Image (cartoon, rainbow, N blue to C red; front, side):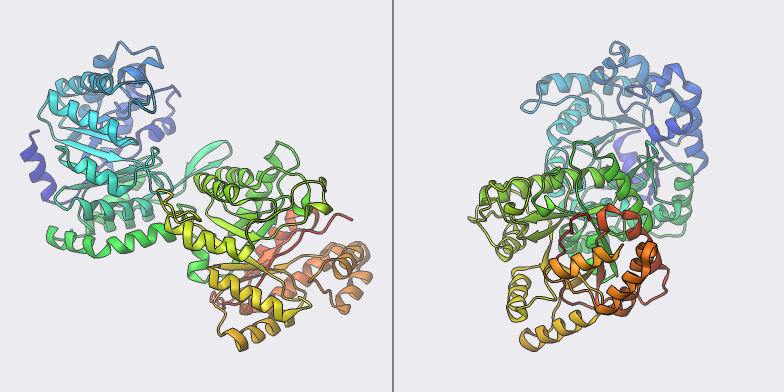
Length: 640
């Protein structure tokens, strides 16, 4: 196919592409190998069956199974000398499936280029020329340079294609949750650099799902309005379930986004990992009902929406499931967050199992404490990262100012952001004198309100404390503590106002056993400072025994257990856990919309109690609207 013919095809309307080749082959029972490309020779029937299933679903654009068919990747399977044979076989199978357009898939080489790796640019170009020559000789209609994560490597592939043939060349990039490639390039940079090369379409594939790909496409359209676009997202984010990666996006969800892609002028629309024939069929049916916007309208709308796209990127909770913590804050959804202490060992399996239970119960996030009671535990940002990776639930990182200087604070925040942690709860932290290492440093360079301001007003604007650039802005949501039952309530009101003005987005409170402390605190605050626009998560702690209740009442500042509760716990006997759970439920119902959410503190690691509470709260058909107000932080009582 020549380039003019390709241009005429895409101008006639969006072309429906295929779905995920690798995940499709696995689903079809293919043997797991370093590359799937050798299956063109060893299991051709499996490859052909997958292509035919996509054609039957309505796909007009089929990618040959040649994604990793270059000398470097094939060398991992001992097939580095069979580049031409494997590429030719892949093209023939796609053609035999009856595809209207056969695309030669060209993925990354699987090696890093200088200066990040040891492969020189000319070596990469030679490897690309070898594969692309084989694809062109085998008769592909277009070349699809896809899932690129390094613009410099993609440039070598494009230059190689132009050196060996005159076929249409499409280029597509994959992005991480931060809307950057693996080497840190954002969509603006990718669009600018790739658009300077001689390509026939540019786009995004794989990545974190259709919602992310849509906002990235808006940026690319704005930067390169003259280039046709392509979008082939994963079927949502991958989730590890039962040792396997599962893609949860339903066909109807992918179909909705196919329509949105078409309306913004995307020319080739398909799917990547996890996208099966059922998704493609639904997308095709939806596209049949849509008339794509004229190109002039597409460009104008993209220009108008680029600011909104940037805002979405900043406000996004970076690809975590709808209903997750940051999105719940923005939509004023009733929010459920559960406190969790990291393990005292290097093993995180029990922690992850508990987080998975909470996620299934409907929690929005797990709030990971930092050395509660000044006792040695795993670093909380590692715990947050493991929970997000393995249990697929958002986390809130406790970030105490105590024991950190400004250098460490900013370095730890950057490290946390790099690990995908987006929600930070700022507090003073427990004094080391009460913990395992009373001689440890206890100095603080910055107050909690000062750290909130550093995050919200410096790092989220791309600056460090001194005002120097940190390259890219962070996207943190920042929380604070409040003691609703403070003895010096005037001082607590003043401190919270300082945190709000510094940029706090939410707050945790100590556990409450009635609504009165919150009502009184809000009234006093608003009399003095005006409306309290803060997402309040009131602490709820299910009691388990009279001893537990008496300890909290007598020894933990800010917690007051009413006499009626103490009497009921005394009468509960062996039913203490059940009675305590009922009191927590009653308190939550009494608070109603006075609290925007609940910060659940499972006593002594009994996470099943938090899961029970969340499920029971969610079972109540209450209006989703949540009021804004003030809340605070909860210490973890010692076992006993």
